[in-house]
Length: 239
Image 1 (cartoon, rainbow, N blue to C red):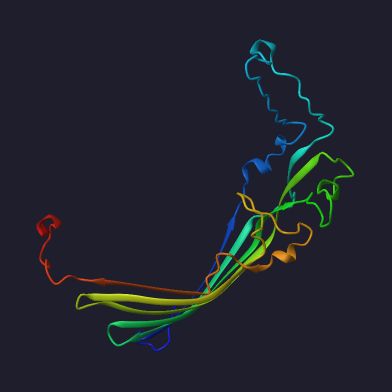
Image 2 (image 1 turned 90 degrees about the vertical axis):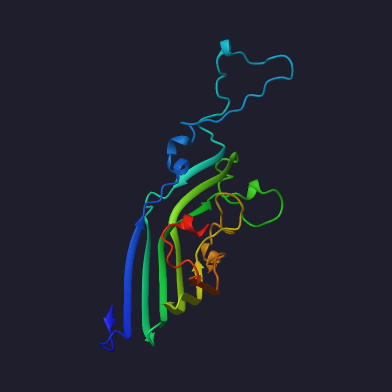
């Protein structure tokens, strides 16, 4: 902070921060959950007559470990921790003895953010979807290839206006308005716990205004000291 006027009436403040986050996505980073180390099978009993007995043990896997199918989990071996940088610059001005006005600029940059892709996504076209998967020629039984990398970026810039009144004669308030925009690189279009981009081969299509972006935001709060009970020390005395 810097006191421009020398008397505490006008103050300039600035700040910068940087933080990192080690992304861990549980099952998706455990490569031992892929074939041939992990096989998921479902046994459906008959309606009346049992077809499997505990004494018989579990049947041998019917899936060929050399020909995996279904979901495959992968992660970029060069996956990097997410990074966020925060910058702010504010000018505060005292107005009289009770009011303070503030104008500021804030910015946040996100780099190496985690993103999800289906690397075996069907390419656009007509007819059945599976033949249009990139890995169909290698193994037509492979479905989605759940891939995690750290190529996603984001940024936010905003203007902040604020007017506050300290508690004087029992009344104080704070009014603020912000004007800003948030843009990020991948929110995905497929609903569910993990969202996937429209086109796994063209992530530039995901660069857009974030769904949680709020261009205008206004907030107000105030406190008012009631004109009675000023000398009460115990809240129970109010009753």
